[in-house]
Length: 105
Length: 385
Image (cartoon, rainbow over all chains, first blue to last red; front, side, top):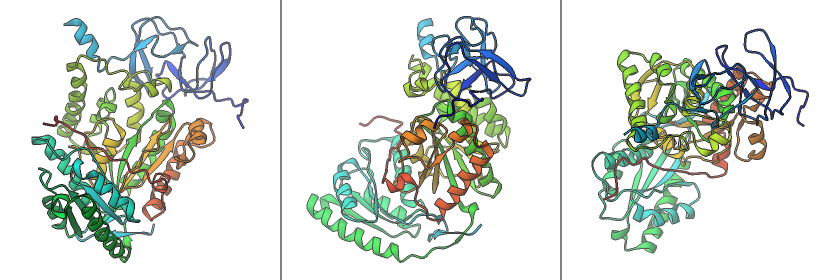
């Protein structure tokens, strides 16, 4: 039976992270609790976030590092506000980008 | 902990007692398959290689086939060949027999075609199964275990739940003197600096960095974007956005262990401890490489679910996604999704994994074995000529 009253809806892995990972489907407008070793705070989710996807927990300006596990996992392609879905539509990987090499040659 | 297993002639320790029908070449596949299917108690190694291979590519395939024949989980081997191939069945058989393992050979051209080769093979295999069944278990040590770490069909629960739990189990095995192999080099891209820091020497650290750089350069040289392959479309649907994110999650399987050395594909480690083997991220090829290197047991984390097993080694399937544990329960051994649901800690699940590893080592069959999932694939590093 699904526990809709479960309080932990996202996981923040490292205090340096600017994204959290949803461990439930999050609805737009929902308020979730963020806890990562820093004082617990509330965050309003502004978009639908599917189970397993990332939500920004801090402002990420365009062309800045997205941090998860305390390490860079890519770069934002636009400015991302807290509560927004973070995935392939607004961030990109910096590794194995043979397509960029090809474009630049 | 009391553990019982099989001690082979060369001193190595196995946790299974398989009679392996080993096709040396693609042309012998059909006959090898018919022998395996006719004889209860055999397992197959069937593959599309063995002919038209050159240099290091040929050596790698041979090293892998030989590694399977020599793996201590294997009691006896029936090599099935055609008769004209470079991957000579008789020579392969000799190399296996040299280590004291019972081996027989069927050469289709010498036997006189499909039916005669199959019939002779069935007779030989039946004898081998009878003899293997008479072998007795002896006490073994948990430090005799070599564990392969694998992840596939990953999603973000892999990095949060399943992989860190495997890391706990991996550390427990290393603490007791066992050996652990991490592989899937592409899935270290983005996390290689963290792994290199944990190398036993600067030299080994450099080897790790070069190994990972080489794989990334392959993609760049091909002028392709790694995304869509690494991460895969399934990874991406599951929430993984970049190879960096995937790798940081994948690395957690290796716990906190110190890396002793890097290994070529299907190479045997020279000692105990944690090693990193250069394999693709392709699940079946990486499991095949690690088992060829001597792993008797594999733990395989998955987010989206996968049924993959191995002909000669138990593959323990662990998912950190509670939905997958329900939808693919037939294939899943451990539910690490309890971490995601807040019901168990990573440490608790890690202990459960370690306990199942010990039970599997003692003979308890895991789901991939019960379902007879016998996937096998070798990594090719050259074209067929």
